[in-house]
Length: 171
Image 1 (cartoon, rainbow, N blue to C red):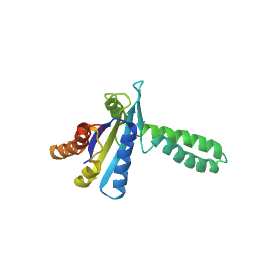
Image 2 (cartoon, rainbow, N blue to C red):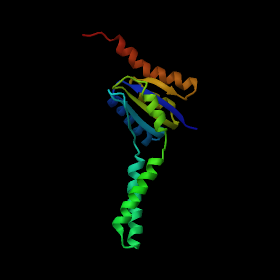
Image 3 (cartoon, rainbow, N blue to C red):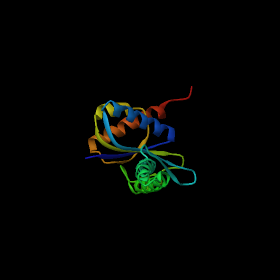
Image 4 (cartoon, helix red, strand yellow):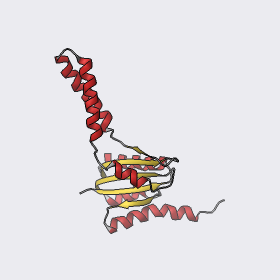
């Protein structure tokens, strides 16, 4: 069973940095992510999703390849490629892998303009190593499906940097 986690960050750059850290940890088999999306609320109130996997583009490329191949059989490779790309893009548009896009857009509308939300679909993780990597990153948990123990540990790891930043005096 997968867990959903949504963390709000003050900037898109910080959310992207944390996502890059978690993706590097995935290569070390410390975490297994089903999806990792950064949602940014623009000043005009719209929400932009930065997804890792683009199903529309992937479907268009795949459809163009297969359409060209079928088009070669009928001596019309360009027409086959065009039809294949269009049908592949449509198939990709209708496919929603990972976290539901509408859910992410609605959740990100609740944050302040300019803030970003990192949505994570976590299949498995080595909790202590992931929490150590998130230590000092900041952020606020918007939504979590973790049990209370993991949730409190994550809040503590994220809050520890806020407490340190809040107590530092200017020099």
